[in-house]
Image 1 (cartoon, rainbow, N blue to C red):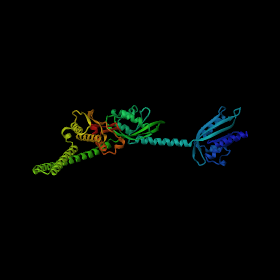
Image 2: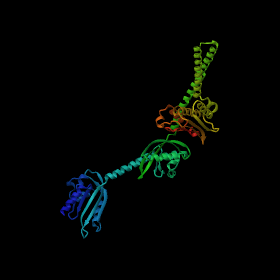
Image 3: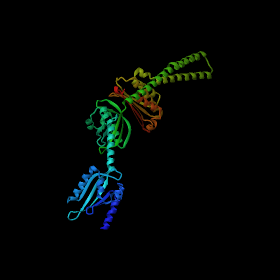
Image 4: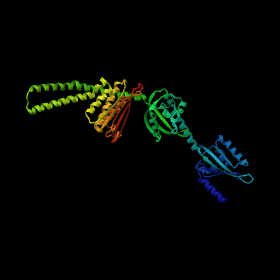
Length: 468
């Protein structure tokens, strides 16, 4: 028995719980070393006297806990006892305790020993309280955030909840949203692309902001900057999305870009007129005067005659170059005949001066295209064709200019050398110019190119009033 008692005491002193033993016959209460390690008491404070335990139970729990212990002892069939209560440690701090005990009886049901363990779960309670407070704070921030925020299930893509800003911005009730999948906020023409993007983004715990058009319940189109992150909500792994409406900002940027482009176009026109009306006229007059002098000089020495004729040829070439530069800077064909004929004239000119097969398909009907869009599309076509001829070395170039369902489509496709789009997109002046002009029209640009397979440049311009 002594050996078993020693083994029990050793085990009691190495476990993390506070082990105790009550001997009713001797009226002795034994404590393991945990009472010192966990609660900070000294042996003089706790040794032997059960009144120590009674004293340290919080007043509001004392009667309940002591009564339950007495009732367990008196009950003939009670083999265990358990209670939760607040316990005051040596420093006067409240500890949350789960106290469990085994009641050992003899054959007559008389209690011989009660062996128990006190588990201090104060840290767990505090952690839960802090978590609850954190969740409440998060929910408050979520509900009152001026930015639209919603949570969805990544398995079903159904809305789980949304804050007030979402309801106000998109016009749906929370019940309506919960019956919808998140891609339903996007235009029909973007559904395939946005579903692929959602699938891709779910591979990452957090995604950077991306810009997408969305549709409100009233049919209004907005431009949203969207980012997502994984969260745990109501015990489930869900996805939090922030959708910042940047429609005004985007339109302001587009107006600024449009102003820059218009300023650039005005400067082009000014230079073109000065070249044509100023320098071009002077060169033409000089050419006429020199021809007149040459005719009046009579017979010149062969060397002088050849030099004079060579000078006149160079002068005529300079006049022709100035005329071409002026026409490129100021596409008079657009003002006189419109985008279709101006594009056709440009393609015919390039075809006559290159060994490249051009194919031009046009179908604009009788729609009225704003002047700024006509000029920007013409400039993009100029830049794309010049880049293809200069760098691509293609055998053929296909150009399409089509109107459909309130959108204007222009594609330039060649079978040339191709290039690395990621490397050249921000490095080339020509491509940056194309991007700027696309931005000024609130248009969409897509450039696809493969080395050795050629390049496709596509521009889609919305013509509805909302995006002008």
